[in-house]
Length: 387
Ligand code: NIG
Ligand code: FE
Image 1 (tube, rainbow, N blue to C red):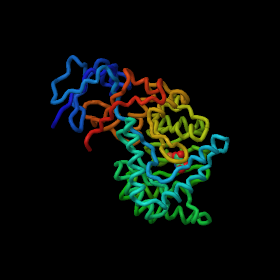
Image 2 (cartoon, helix red, strand yellow):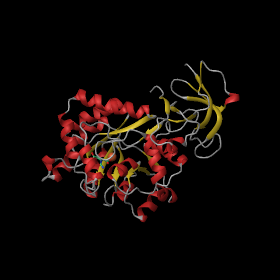
Image 3 (cartoon, helix red, strand yellow):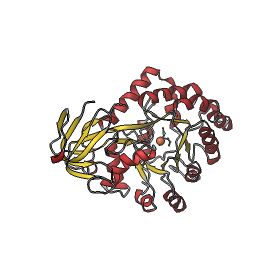
Image 4 (cartoon, rainbow, N blue to C red):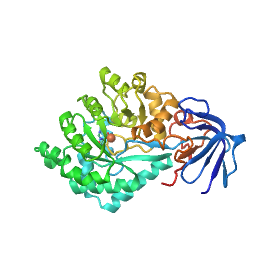
């Protein structure tokens, strides 16, 4: 075991309410942290720091837990900037462009897909992400979804089966057959590779009954549930997510008061994706509304070529502060511990003793700079513990 003392931390956010100022952020000033290759061993005031094998003096910088990006579609080929330009000129998003990414992804070689996905993961990491969820959903065939999940597994332990992303063109007039495939042979082939199942339950994708069919089968196959819900319309997807005790319900752009209250009484996390509202020029949902109801809120990039080609969690935090009524501290928490809750993980998203030693040194004295200086490169180093 090799230990490292990270000292002279100007502002340390631990997200452990037992530490520091006893808020949800568990914040300390003039602090130090001792880690080994995998875990946090000690947290406290700098003057009381124990000796370690190595010392890293961060000279007053802020240190935060690594970001937990709990919603991405990192494995894809091609790009859709023309669709983005059309939206900026007023054309609404309807999910139709997904077919273009499916065609490009099907045509891509394994090596090209692997390289493109790894490059996007590198960008996330450079921006402070230490845990990432990655979905399939851009091949929509049995072999193709298996291929995407195989690549996702090379990137993360948090892989999600999204065979029910949209109905592919060749099933256009046989959607029941596609739902049966996504809940049958495709699921059987994919389940061993995934931890999660997700469905795009929305206008232009799958309705509530279709989504229920896939999620039911997925649960029987041993997968845990999360859901794309209410991005474009309210088809009752939030209620469906609650039926399945989903770990997370994602997007939540159009949600009724009734569903907000139900989420507040549940353990399902509301994952907000402000990159999607930004890139589709849509109204932002208020995170405050969910918090007021007692819900847990997470923030994620939703990195995908259609609705949110975003690989910066700092930008997501800035958008959530500016447009979703979160304070900088609430947004930081949502992008770290909130993301961990959305993945039902207790070992990441915080820097309490025993947590994974995933921490980020900022080129700033306070974490609030993440929202205060949008577009600046504020991540000095991302330290990700050995897995
Ligand atoms: O999370 N909404 C569904 N899936 C993606 C978008 C997919 C696409 O347009 O390629 C999302 O926004
Ligand atoms: Fe998504």
